[in-house]
Length: 475
Image (cartoon, rainbow, N blue to C red):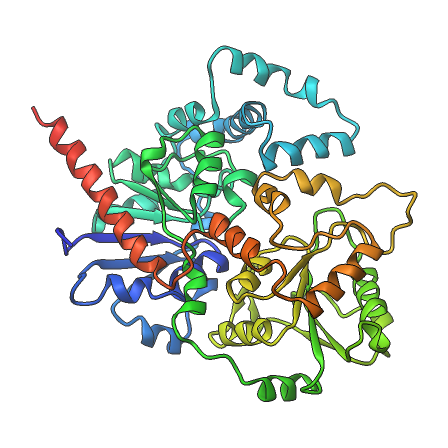
């Protein structure tokens, strides 16, 4: 590294970002003697790391600040904040009509019986005048005073500030960073944020994303220069490719009370917006795989967030287990904080599952990393044939376009197709193999356990860019 003393300041706002950063080798690598970066991580007190976790990150500084509660103290920001957010969101909706964000907003207008056309008429006029959401963000950077952040930045000025969230308004305090001329890096830790969140009310100088697929969406939707977007892969997936060993099948089956010879069907439950059908989904799968109907003895693992109760209708069903990710809910409701051993249990669960069923969740990508056959349920289980398929609208989501075009997973649209998909996945699990790996590559980029190295390389390129810009600005 040409500048080994660079100071990096990370703002971590929720458990997803925390695990993205601390469960990979990135911080270890940045702070080793050869790299020599000085890393400080700022996070809310509710995300405080355990002593065991801190022991493994002893060269990293941690600063606890409840920045979610910070409000600007200047009159301009307090007065204009909500109005500017609304205008920027409406502009993004009309300038990127294909985005997941825009689709969701139009669906919400329809649900409320409101006319999207009338609601967004003024934004269409602003669009025709050449105004875009990032213009609002750039203007808003001139105000918004946050004394706590200012003190933190001035006490020991960092060379770069890194953050992970473009949810509108949540990171407005980073305007203090922009006004100081400190380069700001946005590291997007998931596959849907680029198209489903925003607009960016603080504009980053550089952006790190998983893949070219996400890069394309981000640049088109947020009008960001592609030369300042770097692809790094998926930090949290590095674990699967670094020689970590899962539990043996015997150990795993003993923990979950599963006969070793059974075919294991994993249903990784995720609840699509507006669809609450946990019980019917599980019941449908049980009806299809029960009583050796597939020619095998099958056991279902129902894996869900601890906030999802086990359906009482299934209490008497044999050959079914429930699995919650180990960890705990953050006290302020920011999300689920996984325990350090959760990575190994998730890997073991996937490795020993003969087929993984989900509804277009990130668990699909985890499964593809471990070469498990994946079924994405494309209909509402329990609905009658004369009812419209409420899942259809999700098929148009921008971040799901690669999945819908690919043959890398099964996407059944009714019960008969689900039964056929399960049968094919159990009897010919490699039938989608090459297409599945192409899909993984398209969405996640390289899957080789080296994303943390590409992250550092991306930082070096961003630093070279900023250094060249500084040189050009000299008289």
